[in-house]
Image 1 (spheres, rainbow over the protein chains, first blue to last red):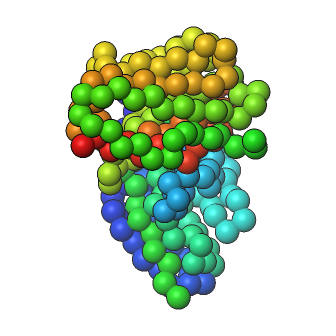
Image 2: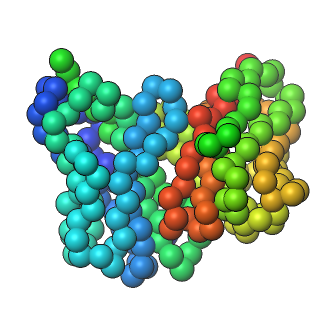
Length: 115
Length: 114
């Protein structure tokens, strides 16, 4: 079974600054994928970034990047140059191959970007 | 349409009633997933379809919940004898083939059981 822990229920950041959201996970599988999803008040889950566990290089998508520490089972999300539109719930999730096809999500971090 | 759509957007029902929630996935996506999101929680897996068949229904909480995908496209989640504890947002997602592919989510149906 897989578990995902997000230890920061809420965070806030000033516009244009950088913020890091934490995520730790546990799995016994050797091949897995990690995801960060954003959920604004509209409820629609939007993929922010995806990381394949077998790839050493940290994934990046424009202002979003991850710090993937495989040995520590840590997968943090860094948002640079924060924008008001980044205000949302952020969920970390894992899919482990060899088991179910489901995503397992953390409880989320509510991020507020202040003007 | 370009994305995953779900209807209705909101559903209010009375305890004991039957409800159906519909999901229309992205065209060509063979994998379809249902999740349930309670207030203040992350989504929890309910069921996964590959084509027309339910490949994994281990997340369905009890036999009041059932889902179908008869033609491998649109899916319906059916809840019998609704209870107040069923109140949640029900999310549908689809992916090209597998969960390791990106899952694209719909806007969800907010179910309220009075």
